[in-house]
Amino acid sequence: DDFRAWVRHVAVSTQLVNPARMVLGNLHKSYLSDMGDLAVPTLVVPAGMSVDLGHLPWRDVVVKPAVAVAGNGAVRHATQDDLDALTLDGASDAVVQPYLDAVETRGEASVVCIGGEPTHAVRKRPAAGEFRIHAHRGGTVDPIPVSHELADVARGTLAGLTEAPPY
Image (cartoon, rainbow, N blue to C red; front, side):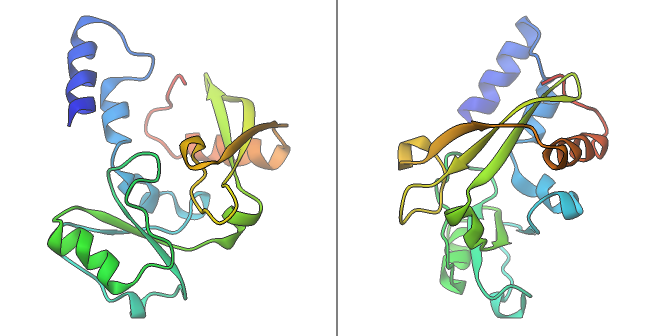
C-alpha cells in the first residue's frame, strides 16, 4: 500500500520511466497467468476462495501471495493448509505454480530490455537449501550472455504486452 501511494504521488509530480499504470499493474502476479508458455504456469486464487491442490496437474507446488516482494510468504512443497491460510484465513489473493527444482539447481535468468531490446542478463541462484533467489536470503546474481533463446523469450514477452515498457 505504501509503494502504491508513493508511485501515485511521484507520478503526478514527475515522469516515471515506466508509466505508473504499468508499475502498479505489475504488482499483482496475476499477469503471469496470461503469459502462456512464456512464464511458469500460474493459477490465481482470489481471496476468500480456494482450490483443491490435489486436482492440479502438478505433483508439487509453490504457493505465494499475489502481491509480495523478495519471496516473502512463498511456500515450496505447499499443502492445502498453506493455500487456505493465505486465501481463506488471511484473505489475500494467492498464486499457485508448479514447483520447479531447476530453480534450485540451475537458478533463473532475468533479462533487462531497454527500448524493447535485450541489453543484458543475469542468472539468479538461491543459496544451498533455499528456493528463493533473493540476495538477502543468500542468493547470488551473476552476469550471463544474452543468448538467442533468452532474447527470443524477452522479445516474445514484450510482444504480448499491450504497451511495451521503456525499461
